Amino acid sequence: MDLEAGKDMTPRQSPPDEHYKATYETRHGYIPILNPTVELLPHEILHHLRGWLEQNHRLAIYRRDNNSFDIKEIPNLDKREALEFMNKTVLIYVLNGGGIGGLWEPVLHNYLYRRWFQPYLSDIDHGEYIAIVMKPFDQPPASNDDAAVRHVLDIHSMINRRLDSTKLETPPFYTTRPLFRAFFIAIPDRNWGGCAAIEHIASLRFLIVLTGETKELSAPISFASIVDKSEARTLNGLETVETDLETAVDFVMDLEHREEDVFGLQPDPVAASGGTLPFTQEPLYEWEQYMAERLGWKGGKIVGPSSRWVDMNMYIAWTGLGARVDAVMMNNQVRVMWVWHRRNCRCEKKEWVFVDKDTSQDKSRVTRE
Image (tube, rainbow, N blue to C red):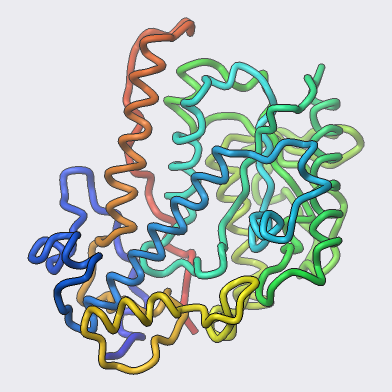
């Protein structure tokens, strides 16, 4: 099968009223495939395996963002915990405040993930992602934005020092990205404006702060591209802009593209696909190889990256286990938290909107050489 077929196509997100199952999933059902007790065609096997990885990546990101490290834990992160920060582009730090307890996490997660992720195409095999979100329980109160930025800078520096100290134990193809060192994003507590802030998460105000670190970047970071959509500030002596989430995500993804244009994808997905699972000598796709053979695979060794497994001429809509998690679990999580919030709301706004609409995908995210 030509895995390069359709390489310039970007699969669309399935709308809420469209089924997320591939034809073979409808035909056999999930259990016989997952057990497995049926045989699939080669293209179906590769599609299923990619969906499995998409599902696992999504759940891993969501669980980490909802179980933030405490500040006291950062200096002692072990080598496995340190990997959570590797291959991420930016730290997003949520400062204590109104917070809309339990509701902001799935709404923010869905927005970020759906903006960044390209079904079938995004490189995810080594935990790559746009951000790691933190809201430590043990963070101190910040009296103003200067104090907030000072605090987040301290935490950001602490994280980078710990990552540097674990470098000798870090597996191949896991790195602290230069962009991760160069800036961070903070959400001030004053910006949590009750239900309205969550209903319109793209308009929530964020601070983008440059740390002054430019080592290994293709060029210094400039806010010129968003000058008309942001307010320039200087906080704790650092160059900062305040802007909305939509603009902030555009800005981060543009920086990702800029660095990829110069240095290529990091880690290199082809080179990295020949590696092993972290802290083991097991081949990266050992489980996928095992499952493929049980499903009837006779095509030899499964070769990565998984971003090249799906024949996009055959799978135009996004289907599979990754699409299922997005359409069912993540949307249901938001619905449940809205129901909980409605019962306990102390906000001024009393109009209720269930925010589970898929956001549009950035169609420039991935191109294959």
